[in-house]
Image (cartoon, rainbow over all chains, first blue to last red; front, side, top):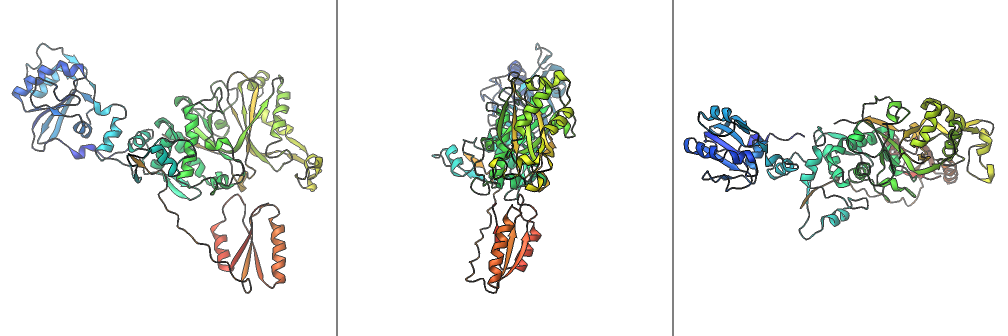
Length: 489
Length: 90
């Protein structure tokens, strides 16, 4: 994360020449060199800064209280003890830990530390403890953040405050404090000011910082941020048509499918209950995208979001493909990416429709079985070219693996099984008004739009189930097409 | 506690709808078909009524109802007509 160079604001007295030692009592090496510091104090100009206990080291008078860690922060102290040689307020050279010969050379005191071991490693400076750099950046005013600060009064509950401001999707959000947002931004190398995309429906430019704020609120960890950023980027692509996905009366939400090494690295779930609750990465990445659309884009239910019924996945719907033991190439590889590339794919999808087939052992039977459900997406009599996401479980995948069916073979057979005579689905057929125009009665009709079926392998090891997730009726170039983008750090 | 604003920090400019005209006499009426099924049926019927009242109509169409209207189309309607009737649902 880019910050101003803290060295620009030195806190070493400008006219000081001599040595500065930064120590903490809670460090064995610092305690080891108490006598060394006393020796130095007698013969050299020495300022000792103590990070945790201003009474330490007791061997030195006038120890400087460094509990606020300002010098450590501004001078990038990472290890204590640190010994800085300073001329007229400027650091010339630095030693960390205890190396007797180096200390003797730097101080020009050839007998310094007689009787001590030649070497003893230092400890981590308190200023670089987890979470501390962000707190210090905030405290000392070097924040790179541009967002407006909103004060929550002492007597106000910050969670209730977030609800009242309309920032929540209905569940509590993590209050986006500056320290939390800075910590979140440590998850990406991108500048907080970089524009990620223009978020519908308000067409508001959205910075990395705004994504990070909403990712904090969603409950993300910093390492999820690159995935969230990629998802936001994908949602902003014109071909995804996020405005329409939001505004439609239909059920759809942006569904995020994560591929590549990132999913295991950040602990995503691709196994048991993969489409359900319980995994922090799956739950919060999807939620972060929805909060960006809500808060930055201004898209809210009853406002531009006109969904008649919606679906629970609109809180956030994100999962990882189970690639480790998949027999087929992954969704991302099918879509032109390398297996070692991490990607997100966005699909405008409705809820989960289960397919339980515990009897098919032949791939032909299972394909027909899956096709039966696929033929019902949107409406069983709609053959205008639907999109769908088919999630195949490991036990269903096994049927194809044992028979040696490739993904391409399965797609070909499935296409045949989802193509029917028009007569069965024309308007009025089966005494149902809805259907295809009568002129198509003699035609063969394909259920699925070419390129409109996404297939991913996911789920727990036991259970002969798969799932169909219906796409939006307004699919393809006239509406939304699935979008895959690489994840950048 | 200080929180960072998660919104775009923009206040959308409030636009007040123009007052409805007292009469359609002398006005040109845009008939906007958003490409939803049967929107054309509705607009044909309304246009026929208006034409019987000697009110001029002009037909427009969005390329797809799934996307917002192109700016060019909006500008064209504004420059050519006074009133818009839009067929929204199917």
